[in-house]
Length: 377
Image (cartoon, rainbow, N blue to C red; front, side, top):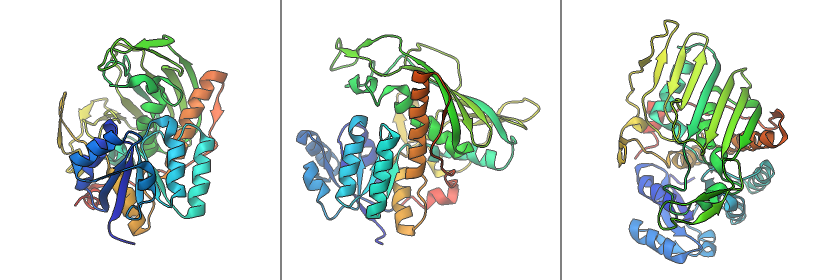
């Protein structure tokens, strides 16, 4: 196989700028074309990043493309990814991969029949901080993980996103929008989930947008915005996950995992970097010395200061996995297991009972310093 794969993008919204700007950092990727149902959006991105603007039909038929990245809204992820596979291209999708396990299994069967690969974000668990946490756990420093807590809570998306309506429809909500970062990192750190239970609710049936350009618009809320879930993992660990857009402030940490020999405090899985802390049986919580991992290095400015942002690492790892003939870390099996976990959480909230997982997966291979450097140009 070629040492570089031609890449196209369908969906030229906000997140497309991240992929187009960061892809040049990585081996195996050659960004060639973009498409959007709004031709003007595609032409704008093409002009900004020196790629070709095409219609969706033209892009699907483009023989130069090996992989197409699906950056459309969640409600269209299944249909667009299916069209990409039918066009004979590998798929890399933004999260969530699909909105139901049945859709995911249909994509799996189609990909298998056509000998194609499917990968899916998030890839933030490949960040230097989360891989440091993985190494610490794998080394046995805090013993066997037995329990933990995760919290991702805020007032909501309508205060900053330019077009927040879809976040509150089926396929949105904090579990399917933000949950993928937490579930993917938990799979990275401790493995697959066995069963889940949850209580779900929403604070209001409508929201009023305060961000521009839609300030004052009232949008419906059709999915739970407040979820408290309990996850039992195959290894026996029990983790509490709280995800809410109905919280104005709180003092909960993003992720804490408790082991038989100590505890580890993992930074926000929505990002690649951050401080990892840990304690032993002496209960003395101290920051771990950050290792020289390339995906821990600050490379962007943000409203909160410098940060590490290496989104597209998962796409690059998938490209190199295809070239090298190995398992991609952001694999279909892990994405489908994440969908199983998240949709089962929502189902549990409706049915008020434990839901057993019908899928499983392996932990992704750790991404150490050498492995990360091998992805960079």
